[in-house]
Image (cartoon, rainbow, N blue to C red; front, side):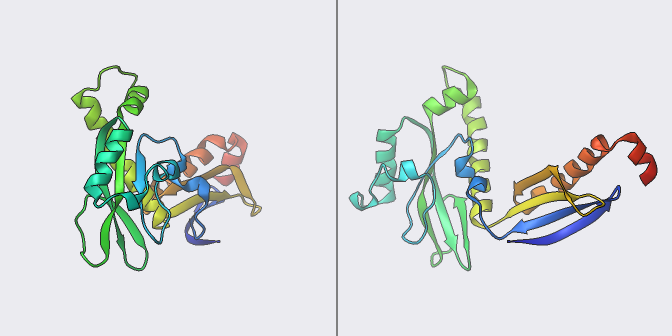
Length: 203
């Protein structure tokens, strides 16, 4: 199921922005190429990375600090940050441990291993500059996962003059702020793909 949010006419085609009500698994950023790993525990939701979640039993620990120490024993971690969740008519995920004391609390941890850093950046020595770059990636990956769990999945499609969708002009993104770029990409694709003779007829 999807809802049409916006549409525009461009060169005799219709560019349509839709919001998906179904969270398809292929849009889950935890299934994409990623630098981070997530350990999450919540009684009502299955979140984070299953293979990491299965490596620890939360019942074996008395605090999140103990969980953090155990993760760092099992994984050669370069960066680790607490991950929290706010739940009120939906959920949102964020870095840190602050928030409303009634509706929010720690969910787990997000971290990057030294081995993954070396593979990603092709280095032997992990410098301060690499750690800074990696931390920005960590923030971005948490933000994308938050978009996904909040249901902010949007698609942009193009309909030709006959009312048929143009198969090779389709894009999906996370977060409404990124939708403007999808419109720009669709218009650019039409600019580049329409044959000159059709351009003259449209003009």
